[in-house]
Image 1 (tube, rainbow, N blue to C red):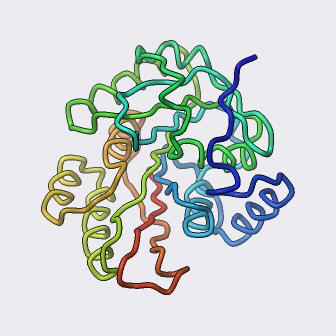
Image 2 (cartoon, rainbow, N blue to C red):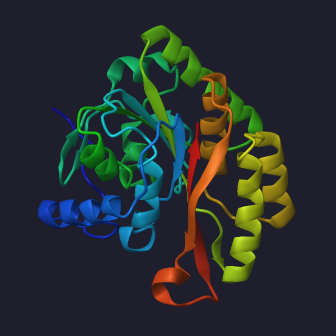
Length: 262
């Protein structure tokens, strides 16, 4: 069977299964009590920088969840929006794709464009470790304008109605890139505040106003829009940090946030 092999294992996260499992165990041991979020924002940097924050995001989903994760990540290589329909490898084992849901999405399949993209891959070990009975639907988003966001959200909802799946949506995104920490925090937290009321239009406006260089603002907006139709009423910032918390360099940081939508 054809699978999507690991492209960034050994770079973004450990390739050794034992080391990776121990690292994830440590991350989740430092999270708070669980919840039942419908969607989350999780960062996709190297685990040394953003792994703990990603664990805070995933910890807001019931550990026993065994449905389907729709994982939406931005394309860092300029590809158009597409779906992957094959199983994804992780050092901890295979994560199976929900092929029925993926087919119902009415978004084209394009396995080669997913091959080197890290934004979705770095979420997979968290899912395999924390939710071993779940399946995934990897959606790589190219265009991130509001109209495209609305279309993707509608396709997710249509697929959910057709398949009757219990779904959770993961938006993979980092926030500000390579700016002074004070600027990153100012812009990122200002934009994130709009998500607490699920105001996607205001989120876009604030990103433009502060020139926030979040790479996955489209996936975030698609996740929030979908969750609103699923009954979500609010978003909550669980944890925010920057690469400077690890490196000590506050002059040029990347921002990371764990956000829960419920």
